[in-house]
Image 1 (cartoon, rainbow, N blue to C red):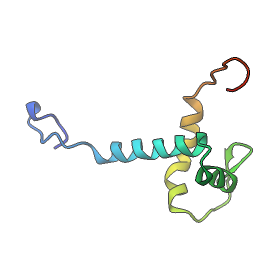
Image 2: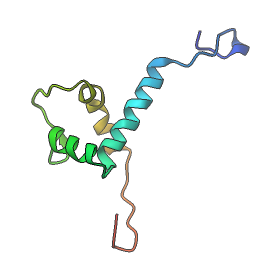
Image 3: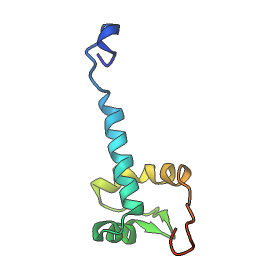
Image 4: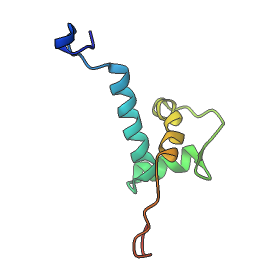
Length: 85
């Protein structure tokens, strides 16, 4: 079903992969955004930049917490003129 039409499939995108991509994008925004929702969520769900180990009631956090380490592992710092990173 997810194969290309040329291969006999319907060319339907794998929804599990699409969902993981969306959660990874939300996790990136969660870790890097200066929007108030991201600042509030980081204060609630992170301790010293790492996910809290205690149980937190949140449907969104359950979905993205496993992607925090993926974002950290695949990110680098870009040093500019010294005024920002």
